[in-house]
Length: 455
Ligand code: HEM
Image 1 (cartoon, rainbow, N blue to C red):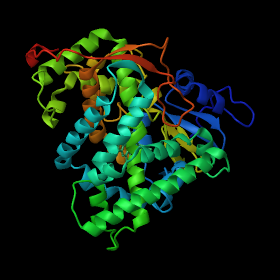
Image 2 (spheres, rainbow, N blue to C red; image 1 turned 45 degrees about the horizontal axis):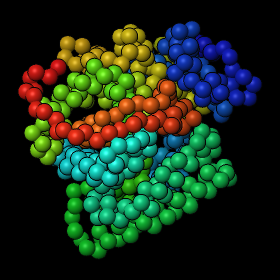
Image 3 (cartoon, protein in one colour; image 1 turned 45 degrees about the vertical axis):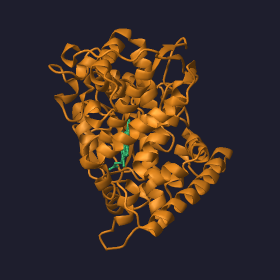
Image 4 (cartoon, helix red, strand yellow; image 1 turned 90 degrees about the vertical axis):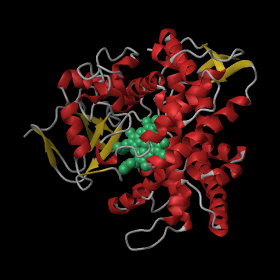
């Protein structure tokens, strides 16, 4: 057995951190080209072993929690989620807490959610002028606060979701930097802003929880699922835990979906031929002007493939990490307790033996006859894989199809930046700002064409 080969170019003290911050995909691709599927790099705090390629993905995503742990790596979210929630508890309790979300993310609930997505997106875009300039990053973020909180936390919550809530939420999330990742409790102004915003948000959500408990009204949302949940010892969740779990779900689903919305809009408009096919599909399905339903969203395969291609090229979570708690082996390599292991969906989805011509925007790779994502369960990783695979993947895809459909049916867009590139300074990676587009509200309704004529 051997140690994984160490990638050259580490600087004293900071190792590869600067290069990782500047261009994580380039760094990992460089390591992969030089050393293959598994190699080491140095990051502050720990030697890190990178896993890329299908066999390495299997090891990474199938290791049990008592061998590789998320808890130590994701401590930066504890000041947001709250003490005793998710990564700040034992893997067993975290598993119970996440299981509380299952009833609310079930298939039957998705119909209600998709109605919420459509209604919120229509209300959101109604407020826009007939023409102007929008920043796609801001639009994705703001729109998703409304759609996900409405769907997840119920209409009573949405009533209380004043501009103040959206502002505080953005402030809390915006204060996350790479420094938070290294030490979430560093006494820096950004962390003080985060804590202040978290405290106020907690108070606002608590009021909604109290109201729901007092009125005993039953809704089809996650708040309801959490109020009804019981730990295996029969204990219900405390109010603080309910607030913490609600913020956990908001956090997991907000920025991730927001930046995917922004990137997908950019990519479609950079590829007018594909956009034309998306618009033909919209005309075929929605051209008679009826209210959009879940069946319509599910029939929008051309749009959905663009979103999948976006998630392949620009996944919001560019890397997932674990701390090694017990030594283990992968092929000829020894991985040691105390090291970190890392898998990067962003870099792995650029491996040409998995996705053909990977730098090309080619949504048809997900279509019939090709389905490059289906060749292996761990080929397409925007939602992670294995036992910690994203619980909100279906919810997120429906939401993205709904919001993107409302956008393109209402507006013609023209991209105005010279280029659009990923901003790796953020923990959840979206396009660099400004990322603006000029918009003009469509005057004529879409003309309906038969669906079978659409490619
Ligand atoms: C485009 C949108 C989204 C993306 C790209 C995304 C991505 C991911 C990824 C990569 C993971 C795995 C993290 C790891 O292995 O360390 C994850 C986990 C998770 N996601 Fe998402 N997510 C999205 C939307 C959502 C939504 C909308 C929800 C909730 C409604 C959600 C809830 C969760 C939860 C609860 C986990 C933790 C699962 C576990 O550890 O067992 N996500 N997500």
